[in-house]
Each structure stands twice: as structure tokens, then as C-alpha cells.
Image 1 (tube, protein in one colour):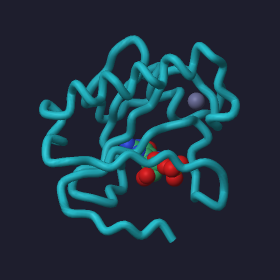
Image 2 (image 1 turned 45 degrees about the vertical axis):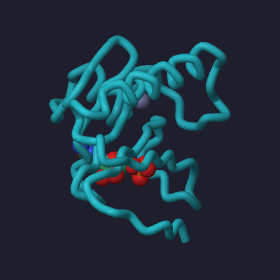
Image 3 (image 1 turned 60 degrees about the vertical axis):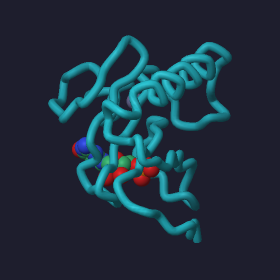
Length: 113
Ligand code: 5GP
Ligand code: ZN
């Protein structure tokens, strides 16, 4: 999609710090980390909301999460990790390309408010 930052990372039009890539996703380090480890899992297919997913893109997201779980030691997530998907303004979504925040590297409080 035109003018989508994450699509430009996927297409390599913009350079970024890719820590993992396969045919379905890239994983990058967040530029403004909220935890000692803060990566973004970015599916290559562009859509903004979970409710916009086709059956195919839903399957791909499941596949990406399955792959992420298998990479947990390689990515330094073996002590635990938190996954967050912000959806819409109230959740603070700022990039309109669905992505999964991967947070780790410390004991985290549970305070979503
Ligand atoms: P959202 O707020 O949409 O859930 O998450 C967007 C995330 O993208 C934020 O955590 C933000 O720090 C990250 N981000 C925004 N611009 C860039 C960038 O140019 N490079 C990287 N690596 N992360 C970015
Ligand atoms: Zn996009």
C-alpha cells in the first residue's frame, strides 16, 4: 500500500533493522522501545485491523505467531514475553498496518489503563 511505513520496510524501499524475515513477515526492533526488548512482528500483507482480515491473512497471522513461538530462544524471549496488538485510536495505534508488539526483558506489571 502506498504511503504505509511498514509496507516500505517490507518492500525494502526504506531501510530498517530487520532481525528476522520469511515469506510471511518481518520482525524489526522498535525505534522507541518500551521495554528492554521491544520488537515488532509485521505481517507482509497490508491491513490495519483484525476485522479486515481475510481468511487467508488470518491464517498467515496464526502462522507468524507459531513461527515466533518457535524462535523465542533465538530472539531472547525464553524468560517470557508479552504480545500486544493496538487496534484503533483508543488503543493508541499509530501505524495503520497491523503489527504485533513483542515486549520482553523485564518483569512486567499488568496495567493496560
Ligand atoms: P502502534 O502505536 O501503531 O501500536 O505501534 C507503532 C510502533 O511503531 C511504535 O511502537 C513506534 O515506536 C514504532 N515505529 C514508528 N516508526 C518507526 C520506525 O521508523 N522504525 C521503527 N523501527 N519503529 C517505528
Ligand atoms: Zn502497510
